[in-house]
Image (cartoon, rainbow, N blue to C red; front, top):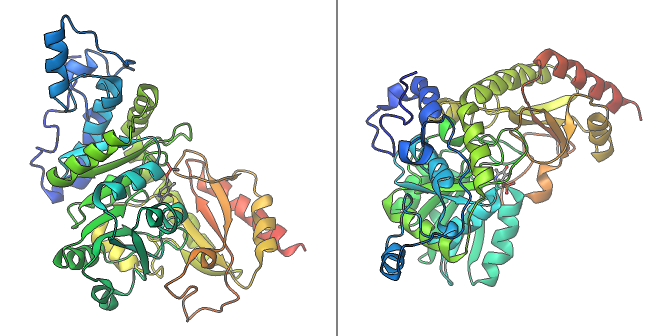
Length: 417
Ligand SMILES: *Cc1c(COP(=O)(O)O)cnc(C)c1O
């Protein structure tokens, strides 16, 4: 075919301008991370299983240990071509990144990145809409290591600067927020953090590097659960953290000290998922928006929380800062309780009931966002406090009309006490 196995301009050196980016990203996804020396003549980098490198003599063994970088095989824990190809592909997609470290799950990526930047005595500011395991990590593991976490309202830009003290080392952001989906002003928050001498990390799982160029918007470290959009098929667990030169080195050192490594089989699956991620995200975002619009007209619904839909807190910021969306959003039911939202979800047939999201299949989950908030007022004052319970949907690749018919069944079941 005469096709080059490698993307012609890999590894962060790509001079593509921001305006070119959105229509070039699908092209990049096809060739990202493909180097002839790793991939050979085949299309997707093969699974390269290895622990031990055999050296011809002891001098070569000593020499081998001196070079710690992707692309130099030394021992399986430092990765091999399949993992390097995936890490390089993710670096190519994250503009401004010098490198990417892979982790055995998204939670491991959050823990690994926080441990790379924090020391005992530090204060960590955590957005109040953080993914629940991040909150548990902040209040548990990090506390045990002498790190104090303080939660802040991500929509309160004016109050943010006052949250810093001389021990504040880092800020953990997430936008849109887990369950409540509000988009915050990441460039403004990251700029304040930088001014205060703090490092900003963002859990960018929802948008991914395709929908939100986190480093370009001012963050220092961009974290993703690859379990979601990159894997895309609900059959692997993995996470990543990408950063510029300074923090990439810290991430790598800490990741190696913690002994994190991902299997080459999973890395190969993640690379396979990555090739179709652009079209999957576009399709599920389009279906999600159609379904969100339909839900917004239902009288049983108090509010649809979908960043792509006008009326969701931060929708204007989504339009300003993001280059794409995805299929994950929530809606809050008008004055219904836990039992009603459970009846709704139990009646669905096309939607699976389960945690996680970002796969090709649609999922639904009853939620009570107020149960995990501490700092911000939730629900917002303008809403009836009876409107607490809701449902989170992850829209997959099914026909949206079938999903809407399914949701009609859910509403009907909700009214049957
Ligand atoms: C799922 C998720 C994670 C954790 O990812 P795992 O791979 O399941 O450990 C982190 N952040 C967000 C926002 C998530 O939804």
